[in-house]
Amino acid sequence: MVQPGNFPNYYLLDALQSYLGKMVAVQQTGNHVQQGILTSICPDYITLDVYGVPFFIRIEQVVWVNPLTRT
Image (tube, rainbow, N blue to C red; front, side, top):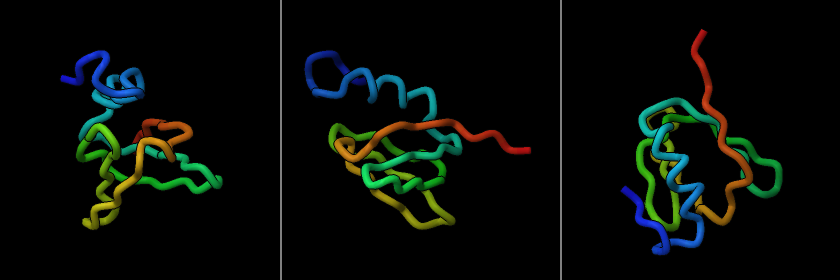
């Protein structure tokens, strides 16, 4: 569990915990949107599994995160 006061983006990191292991879309600065399974949450980056390839996104680059539903 992420502890308050340890990281500048505590609320974002805490909210991401509910998406761990789920398919998400992440918009980064520059209007780039990446989709994948959220596999890890670290203090300065998150990791998405994109077709078996890890994709690292720095927390400072995250604009929004949205869960995706499979239809």
